[in-house]
Length: 220
Image 1 (cartoon, rainbow, N blue to C red):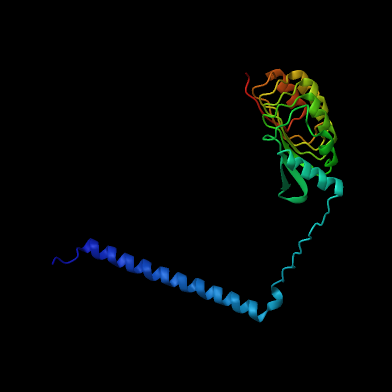
Image 2 (cartoon, rainbow, N blue to C red):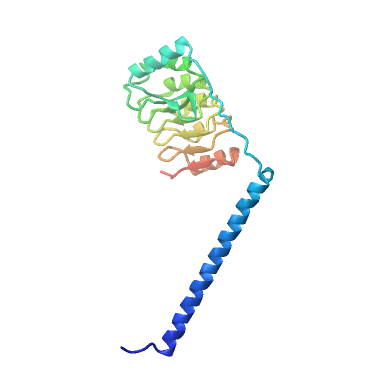
């Protein structure tokens, strides 16, 4: 067949040179790594031993009245879960329970005031009367009230939840008057206000009160 052209021969020589250079560099890197390992073996004191990290197990025990309260909530169809980062705290999903203001388990929830950190009431037909019991749940950090029947009057009860970080009021009947009552939620980081009676003016006042607050709001 045809022999290689001068250009093809030059390309071939270049590939060979590059391959040889790559092998040389690889050998040098292996040699350096070997020297490093040898140095560590000769002078083991130069490598500091990492301290062992001990994980402290947090033990807790529910009081008899707390255990009974949790069982009662489950019987009502409320989903009760441990908080993933603290097994002594609880999260409740009430959305699928057949609850209203007439049979709302206020006293049962109050018995768990030190344990409850998250509550989801989505689409539950509860109003301001039921909301009153939440004022005593001072450990709450997450509260979802979307599409419930709460009004401006009920928001006054939430002002006692000083550890609240997340509040969802989507699809409720609240207005700027209700937002004005939220004056003590210094830990609040996120609030949802779309599909309410709140105006842009009310949102602006809220943000002025809490400059770092993330507001989800689309004017109706």
